[in-house]
Image (cartoon, rainbow, N blue to C red; front, side, top):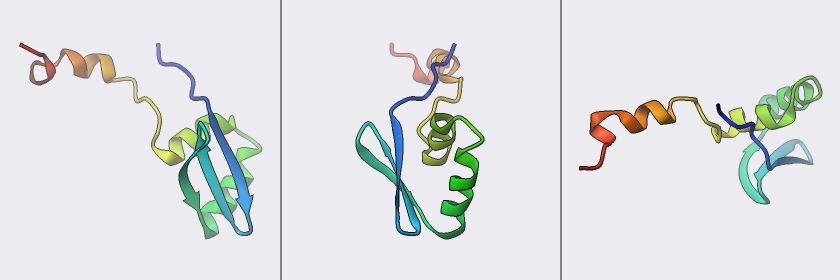
Length: 74
């Protein structure tokens, strides 16, 4: 079971949107991406959306990858 993303916040600075994770800047959206984000954040869970945009989310395959022979420690 993968946990839900948390600790994300965003701040609009003029036409830009700054997304932070636990107080540290993760990414800055500009132009059309910033406008699309602001339109979408009202309809979705903002945490999930920000995690997707920053690439900071679990993909669900971490346990499987850990068991792969290449990743096992001898």
